[in-house]
Image (cartoon, rainbow, N blue to C red; front, top):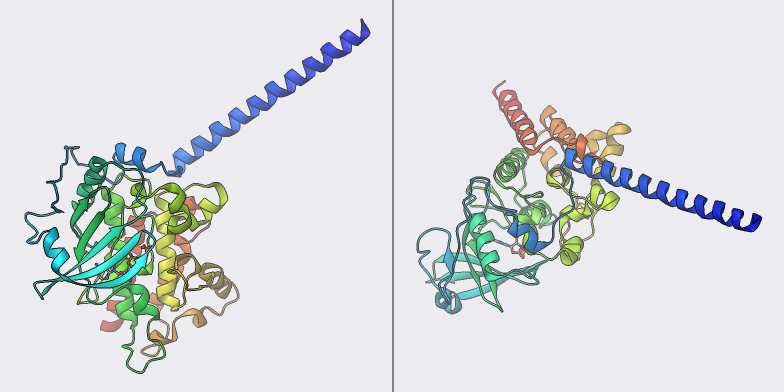
Length: 372
Ligand SMILES: Nc1ncnc2c1ncn2[C@@H]1O[C@H](COP(=O)(O)OP(=O)(O)OP(=O)(O)O)[C@@H](O)[C@H]1O
C-alpha cells in the first residue's frame, strides 16, 4: 500500500511539474511573439512563402498574372530596345562575382552599356513567382534607386539587367587607390551627398515595400555612383529570392546584433546596415560586417563608441576629408546618427524616415555654415 502511495505521489509530482513547464513555455512563447509583433521583428519567411505573401511588392500593387514571352527579356518599360541575342553578341566585361552571381558589363552596338547579373543559387521559385517579384521591383522608381531595366527567367538562367553606373561602387570610392597619387579626394560634401541620397532611397523602399526587410543587403558595394556621383542603391528586394540557408551566411541583415541574439530581422535591421555604412563613410575604415569577400574589416561601431566615451572623437574622422576643413558640427551630427542607427536593440533605432530627416538637417546646417 505504502509503495503504491509513493508511486502515485511521484507520478502526481512529475505530471504537475510537466504541466507547469508546458504552461511556462506557452507564456514565454506568447510573450516573444507579442514583442516581435510590437517591434516588427519577425523571422524571415522562406523564399516562396514570402513571394506568395507579396513580400517586396509595392503596397498599392494589384497582383496581376505575369508572363514572359518565350525566349525574351521582360523589360520594365516598353521595348528596352534590345533582346537576348543582342546581349549574346555584345562585347562583355566581367565586373565581379558577388554573393548571388556574377555581373557583366555588356556594350550594345558599341555604345549603350548595360549590366547583366546572372543570379545563382536562387531559391526554389517558379517562373511566375520570379516574374511577379521582378515586376514589382521594377515598379520602384526613385532617383536614388538603381532602376531595373529588365529580367529574364529560364530553368538554367535568371538574369537581372540594369544600366551601367560609370563611377563604380561606394566601397571602391571610399577605399580604392588610397596610396595612389592620382586618387581624387572624397570630400566631406560629396560624402554627405551620398549619405543623404542613400537615406532617401532607403526611406522610399521602406515606405513602398511590404517586405519585413526591404533591402536586407545594404552595404557600400551595393551603392553605385552615377556620372554626377549621385548614389544609387542596388540589389534591393532580393531577400525573398535567396534560400535562407545561403542568405544567412552572405547577406548583411543576418550579421546584425538581433540576428546573432535571437535570430530575428526586421525593417530596423536595414537601419542598422545604414548606420554601419555611415560609419564606413565617415571613418574611411572597412566595416567587418559589410566587407566584400576576401577583405578584412574592423568592428567600427564598437571602436567609434569607445572613441566617443573616451573623448577622442576627433580622431575617428577620415583624414582625407579633414584635409579640406576641421571636423564640423555636421560631421559630429552624422557620427551620432550613425551610432543611433547601430544601437544593439532594434527598438532604440530610428525609423528610416527619421534617419532621412536627420541627414537633411545636417545638410541644411552645413549650407548655413558655408553661407556664414
Ligand atoms: N549597374 C552596375 N553598374 C556598375 N557596376 C555594377 C553594377 N551592378 C553591379 N556592379 C558591380 O559589379 C560587381 C559585382 O556585383 P555583385 O552585386 O554581383 O556583387 P557585390 O555587390 O560585390 O556583392 P553582393 O552580391 O553581396 O551584393 C560589384 O563591384 C558591383 O559594384
